[in-house]
Amino acid sequence: MPKRYRTKKPVKTSSAPNRKLLIGSTIVVALAIVALLVLPNFLQPEEKYPQANRNSIGDPNAPILVEEYSDFQCPWCARFALDSEPALIEKYVASGNVQFTFIPFSFLGPESIQSAKAAYCAADQNKFWEFKEKIYLNQSAENSGALSDANLERFASQIKLDMTAFRDCFISDKYAQQVQDDLATGQERGINGTPYFLVNGEGPYAAAELEIRIQAALVKIP
Image (cartoon, rainbow, N blue to C red):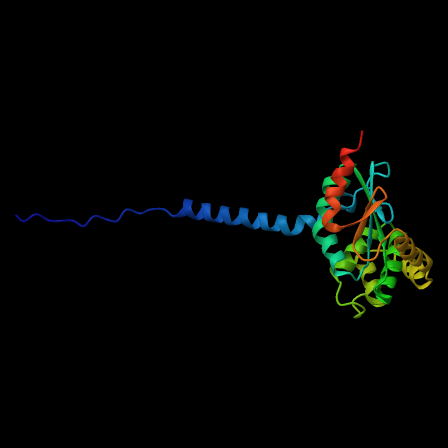
């Protein structure tokens, strides 16, 4: 009798473990992306701007005082504030070695002056640094309307200032003289552009020199 050949049934393989692994990996990646995008928004202002006190951050007893003279319409100032400043704050201010003070040097026109006055009004509610960041994030061509009074009020609302108090301060020109005095004092100290920095009263130094000067000052600390 001829032999009968039987076709072997295919062996079933389960793809369930592979699917679970793929789903698990996808979830992990998704959570990582969410963390990167969302968590920075939950940083407390005191962590981002340690010991903020009006237009200064850091320990008032720190051995090094850095004073920045910047115009709110200056693109190089915006680049420093958004790109370089956070690392310097983390490295030197949060560590207690530096107190950092921002002084508006408003020489590029009316929107610079109005921005400085508005920033000081924000300082009355101890949100100078948040307001400064908002201005630089929305900066555009000089005196083009990007920093109009209406937009400055919008920025104040976005950082949740008491708008009645802010408007009263801003409309009253409470800080008009302060802004003029800042400009005059900066000129007396040798500031002729922005951004420029003084380190323990010495300078002015360009942004590219700042960290070198801070480190040199640290070496001198007993």
